[in-house]
Length: 282
Image (cartoon, rainbow, N blue to C red):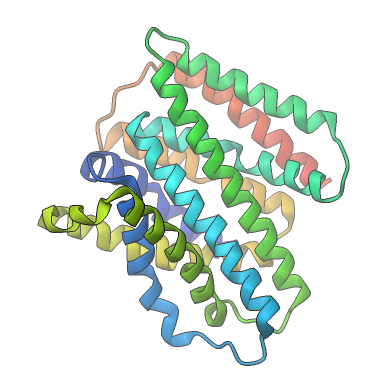
C-alpha cells in the first residue's frame, strides 16, 4: 500500500500543473513528452530474455492502452474542464474496474450499473449550469481515459499473477514503449511536434516533474503496488488522489468552484466509487 500512497502524492500536483502551464499546448504532444521522458528511467533495466513473444506483446498492448490512449484522452480533457473537475471525474475508475471484471467473467451485475448511474448523476449536478455542454466533453474524455486506465490495471495485475517470476522494474519499459508508440503517432498526426520549439523554461521544468516523477516513478510504484494488494484496497487507493488533487487545484493553483455543487455532485460520485470498492472487498 505504501507504493500506492507514494504514487498518489506524486500525482496530486499533476492536475493543476497541466492546467496552468501546459493547457495551451497540443495534448497529444504533452502525452508523448511525459512518456518519452519516463522511458529512459527503466529502459536500461529491461530484460526480455525468457519472456516470449506472447508476454512481450501483452505488455506492449497494456501500455498502449493504459498509458497511451489514457493520456491522450485525459490530457485533452483539460481543454474543456478545470483541473479540480478533471481530478474529481477520475473517481469512477474503481467502478470501471468492477464493470470490466464483470465483462471478462461474462456476467451482468445490475448493482454496478446502478452505481455507474449514481456517479453520472453526480456529474450532472456539477455540470448543471448554463453553457455546460463543453464541460461535458471534458467529463466524457476523462471517462474514456479512466476506462483505459482501469483495463490496464486489471490486465497487468492478471498477467503478473499468472507470471509470478516477472519483476516490475524489468518489464515496465515495455509498458512505456507501448504508450510512447501511441502518443508519438497521435502527435505526428496532429502536427504537435512544432510545439517543441516554443516551450519555455518553466514548461520544461513542469515536463521534467510530470515525465520523470509523476509518470516514470509514479506508474512504476502504482503497478507494483497494484499487484501486492487486494481488489478492494486497489479501488480505495485509486481514489486517494481525488481529495488531494481537488485540494491542491483549489488552494495552491487558485481555481474557482461552486463548492455546493462540487460537494453534492462529488459526494454522489465518491459514494458510488466507495460502494463499488466495498463490494470488491466482499
